[in-house]
Image (cartoon, rainbow, N blue to C red; front, side, top):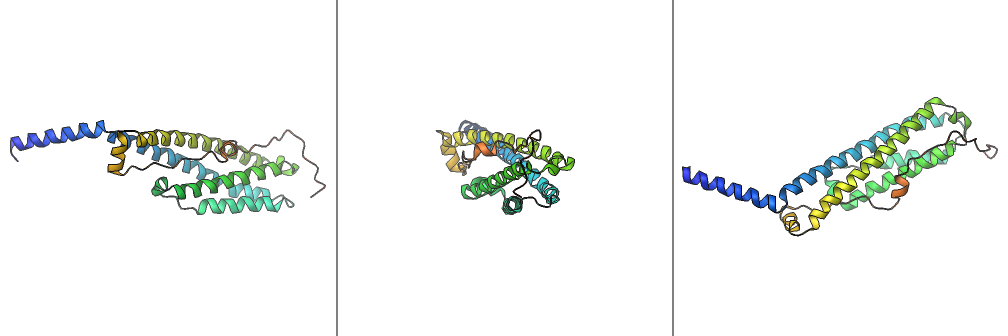
Length: 208
């Protein structure tokens, strides 16, 4: 390659770099990585919760007359949530993303019901292992909320860039699609950690 050819190639590369930067290509790269990192943290916290549940179930089973329907719902909801295969492509597949979100929402609801029912069992309320698990669960639910909010903000920034002109043209050329986000359905419930007030007296157990 001659000196002149090399200079032309360098000039062309510099021009292409400036063009890509001006049309938002580099920003797409940055925001795409931000979304992926935020999503990974969401998955980490959901997995942390899933790992806690077997210990919670085992502790509750020690209460011989515990409401079996509620316990079964938690077990089944966890099985459903953990059976969904999450891949990098999930972020570009709204249908798969919604299935994942629905399953995690159902697990949140089942856990909330279990912790509410547990208030009626004095032995559980006095069980230090159960109380420790409850605290861990509440902390994990809080971390899930934080991780989800970070993901929501990251996707909003990405999608605004994806829909804006002229960066939407860059997105079409390089295949940057709009990414799915968490919906508002059950968001308030999901964002509220299941809590138990152990200071309140237990409800009468005569009906059990």
